[in-house]
Image (tube, rainbow, N blue to C red; front, top):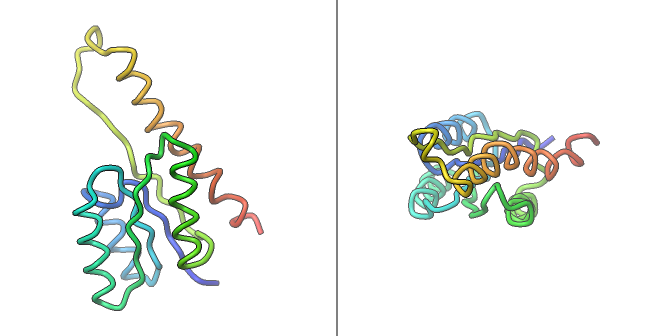
Amino acid sequence: MKKVAFVTGGSRGIGRAIVRRLSEEGYAVGINYLQSSGQASDLEAGLTALGRPAMAVQGDVADREAITAAIRRVEEAFGPVTLLVNNAGIARQHQFQDITEEVWRRFFAVNLDGAFHTIQAVLPHMLH
């Protein structure tokens, strides 16, 4: 079975380190990002220069259609995702009384719904 990983929030920080490690372990890696296109592209270029398959794909985990499309692009290139790392998450410093409804909903959309969306997108292939 071909080893294919998809890492949400994979362009920087902990996600970037996870992508590098999985690549070293022989995984073709989908590097998901929302806004850090330069960092994601640099990581992809660095890995592919080493002969390691990698693909940077933009997609908001809070948007089911967008993240499913990103996962499908990776699967079209490398095959079904066999390992999912739900790393994307947001946390902002706010006094509780200052959190707006919009910020509150975004926290849940990324941190909870995002994991739900990505798991449902990859699970059918994993169950076979």
